[in-house]
Amino acid sequence: MLRSVLRLGAPDLRVSAAHVPAITPEITTLVDEMIATMYAERGIGLAAPQVGVALRLFVLDLSLGRDPHGLRVCINPVWEMKEGMQLEEEGCLSLPGFTATVARPERAAISALGLDGVSHRIEGSGLLARALQHEMDHLDGRVFVDRLRGISRAMILRRIHKLERAGRW
Ligand SMILES: [Zn+2]
Image (cartoon, rainbow, N blue to C red; front, side):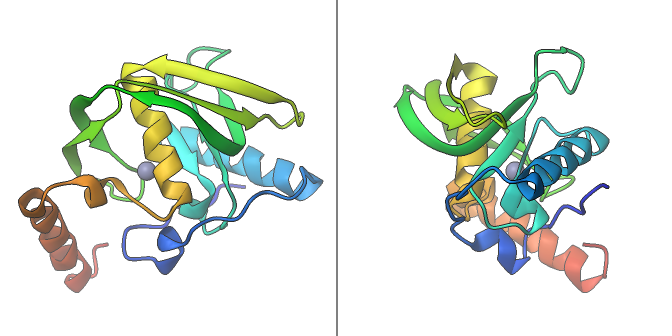
């Protein structure tokens, strides 16, 4: 089953998500549905709060499913390292149609549990570091516009409010 992805404005996107207490069959089903939803929406990452579940987990596949080893499931992720700074264009499934240049760490590492309950480390630079920071932000109720400076943030929010008023958001 595909999940519907919440858009900016939904209160569930703004919660600080809770630790996953155990990897139950319900969690496995949720992860499977999040993976299917991420691929269907052609996103490279999807965090549980984006589908209305306030738990600390996300899925990630920078290859959009093309690389059989590209999929990563990250449960209860914690930061291991963040360093440097990059400025690149970024989007989000919760803000369809909007992108902006966001400052992110150039290199980053997390450790997280996989669905098998085993802890693994994910480390990378560039797009991977950016995606890790983007998804970790979702677990703390943050979206990329929160990291923009006043004017670009205000412009995006104004356009979204316009779409909301027109019933197209
Ligand atoms: Zn996002």
